[in-house]
Image (cartoon, rainbow, N blue to C red; front, top):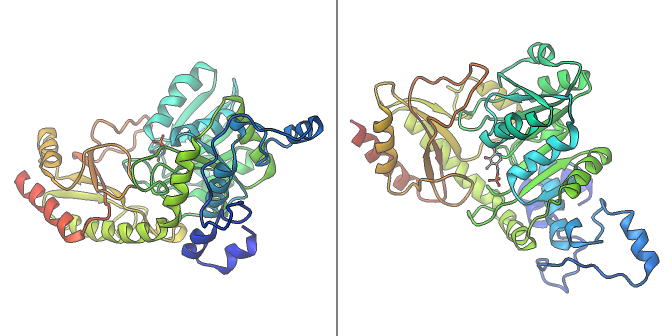
Length: 396
Ligand SMILES: *Cc1c(COP(=O)(O)O)cnc(C)c1O
């Protein structure tokens, strides 16, 4: 979609129209699911010419993607405000691809202490084995602090804001300035901020999305995206994804395209419900703290207000210190409308114990109470509140 379109229209309008131009669909509103491995050419010369453009949404073989992938890539680039996007099979693959594209043996990587757990595992496991060193830093680091952390061999400063499970908001512009001054790339897992944080306007070079979450929106697909804003970064990411054989199912891409058309309205409803429930939870005597950046009580609320245009429907709660691990488990088991399970961004509410899943190595993230992560779906707020109220009541 041309840039002037981005400027002229609001988010909901753009989500209705993005990724639909140029798709040959015989008049139907939506693109088809194009499955395929072999791509045929009329003659040998056109096959040779096409291969040279393989990182350019050019169909040469199934692994380079096809029309369904490209339509989704265009929509995600539009949402993120970047120029080019590469779709991969999962959100975690979207984390791994750019890290491996930009890091090699002898390089140093910086990751926030609040990073998504499997990203930490990749850094401390495979990446370490390949001779890539990672330092975990306080997510609330300022510009001078980041400058002090950067070494001559630091090639990637990874960010995720707000942090997984604990919701610290990072000062992305300050971190980016320090990283760029040292020639390092800034990567961001922007899944939480899907349409309320514009990564490239805040200095990010590579933005990662787990499309599994709000883009899919129905807890029935796994997909990830890596979006960039320069041709050089696009070739780096696309060629790394291609070298490792990454691919996404066109059926899942089609479901993501379907999901994206209703994402603005789902997010608006879910975010409002989540904020109402988070504010209410904050008043309950069993709750020590609610970890939601849109609440004025959040330690980085001012930063959130400066850089984000809104929230999503995922937040954390910390129970009062008097409650034991068993109490917390009883609270979660006592909820009837909240499913107990991983992931988020679907239409259904979820609650999951996070105590024991918050790994830290930079001394951050001690909340002095049992923690639970809450995802608010599309159910009625009154019903969700009543369910949480009886769960809290059972805690005593
Ligand atoms: C879920 C998640 C991912 C990974 O997505 P999958 O599609 O489940 O692999 C990455 N980052 C964040 C912040 C997530 O919540």
